[in-house]
Image (tube, rainbow, N blue to C red):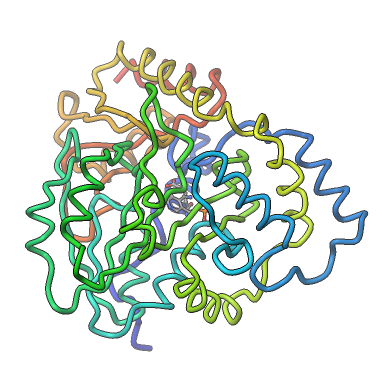
Amino acid sequence: IQSKLPGVSTTIFSVMSKLAAEHNAINLSQGFPDYACDPKLVELVNKAMQDGFNQYAPMPGSTFLKETIAGKVEKLYNIKYNPETEITVTAGGTQAIFTALAAIINAGDEVIIFEPAYDSYAPTIKLLGGLVKTYELAPPSYTIDWDMVKKLFTAKTRMIILNTPQNPTGSILSSDDMKSLIKLITGTDILILSDEVYEHLIYDEQKHQSVMLYPELKQRSFIVASFGKLLHATGWKLGYCLAPEKLTKEFRKVHQFNVFSVNSPMQQAIADYIKEPKNYIEIGSFFQQKRDYFRGLLAESRFKLLPCNGSYFQCASYSNISDEKDTDFSIRLIKEFGVATIPVSAFYQKATDHKIIRFCFAKENATLALAAEKLKNI
Ligand code: PMP
Ligand code: GLN
């Protein structure tokens, strides 16, 4: 058959986690915690099932959960989203990204992405017949020169995908970035897909710059969030999309025929859990401690650490250690040293090798210490 995605193979996250398991390596590759989520949350799922939440949830999401999300968003950002018309519960961030793109992108439309980028963006755009226009971010700071972004604009530019805090680089957008973006898009009908799944994982007292804080951006944005990150439960695959009514309408047209609705008892449990801000408010400092702990451990190694302002990823250059390609180096790390990571070239479409790998530090301190012991010997 003629592939709709020639050149796309199995996602790097599956590849590296599988290799890690086969070689019994410490898995700092795919981004997920190696510790349990709060047992209270599991009890709440049990309770929801016992209470009879075992049939289809409403198509756009449980009313209780959508209202709770609206309350959380208002408390954190002082911005109102209408649960009826502007919030949709999804099967994780990935489905929200897919659905927003599917609702908007026509064949020939151009979408601007910033690479290195989360690996679902480009294939999804291509599947829809869209064209990916890439802005390449440069290590170590991965900042954006917005005048250069403007050069990518054409009459076909339909959407820009933002991701702050960013996977894999751990960089974040500043309020100056947002102001520059506003200048660029005012007067155009370009839409924004803002992937904010790491909104809480932001460090050193910095403030998350959600597009919702800027009316000119909010009115044209789909914002994607993930409960996997918020609740240390990536396997639950639940998240949501915030968007103004006219965009949500289009989003739901696709959502209803893609999944219709998502896991009912878990929606109930999550709503019960996050109505108490104390259940998630500490997550930023929790991961900041992990970041600092891991960076401290790796300071004794030959890896050069890049900045990490957000997310649960730490990038590091191994150019002091080897000039192998990053894919070869990361496979050798698994086989010879027992530590799995992600080669950052996997986040680019064109061959790009800056000799940088990504570690996930959403792990027990003992796991991080064990990994660092091995990494120090390289
Ligand atoms: N966006 C980014 C930047 C991510 O790192 C992830 C990772 N999981 C997702 C979206 C998808 O989130 P989910 O697991 O909720 O689908
Ligand atoms: N977001 C996670 C990462 O970047 C994993 C996502 C996935 O496995 N699809 O590692």
